[in-house]
Amino acid sequence: MQTIGIKDLQINPAILTKALEAQEYTLITKRSKPVGIALAFDDKIVTQGLKTALMIDAYKKSLLSLGQLSKTLNISKKETMKMLSLMGIDVIDYDFKDELKDLDSFL
Image (cartoon, rainbow, N blue to C red; front, side, top):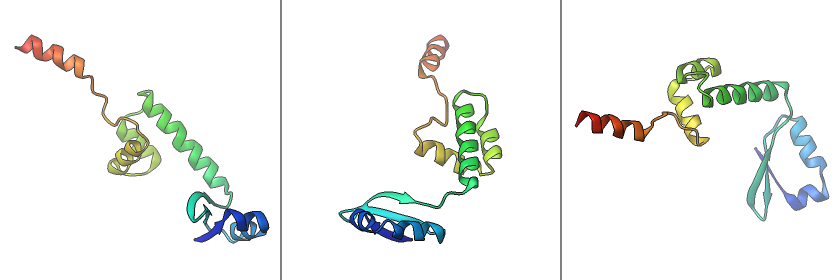
């Protein structure tokens, strides 16, 4: 992975173009702190990204189960749960109020 500072990019934008044409990931920094990553455009990025986004949206709307989402994305359930967790999406839909009602009726 190549690293390019914002100032270097302003002076010579061809640096980034050459890295992208060579299919290299490029870390862009500002004052030595990462601000972004550039990668070469590929149709696969669009189709895989769109597919993932649509499947996650279907999962959030309860149209897909965790297992179906995993199978569709071709990753394990463990990887799917980790991905959803990192995205801030609940893996388990749990209504604590319903459980309290059940507990009250049980007691």
